[in-house]
Length: 112
Image (tube, rainbow, N blue to C red):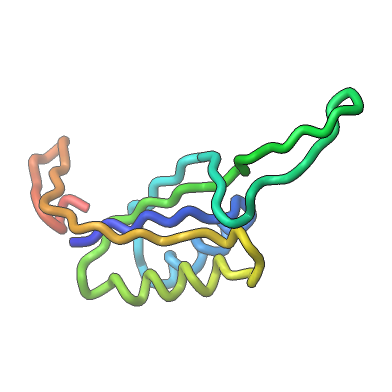
C-alpha cells in the first residue's frame, strides 16, 4: 500500500475528487493548510504599509491506494491540478506498512 499526499490549490479539489471517483478511489482525507514554495506568497497593503504574506492557502489531500493504483492516481491528480503556473502543488508518496479498521479490526488493504 502507498500513501499519496498531494498539496494542491483549493480551487482544484472538486476536479480531483471527480477524477478519483472515476477510478473508484475512495477514502480521501482533505485538510486546509498554509504553505509556500516557489510562489513566495504575495504583497498586500495594510494601513498604507506594504506587507508580504509568505504563505498561501492550500489543500492537503491524503489517499491510501494499492501499489497497482499508484501511477493512475498520480496521473489523474497531476492532470486535474495542473494550471501551468507556480503554486500548482506537489505530490509525495509514502510506503504504508499496515492499516486497521477500528470498528472491525480488519487489517491491510481491506481496512482502507
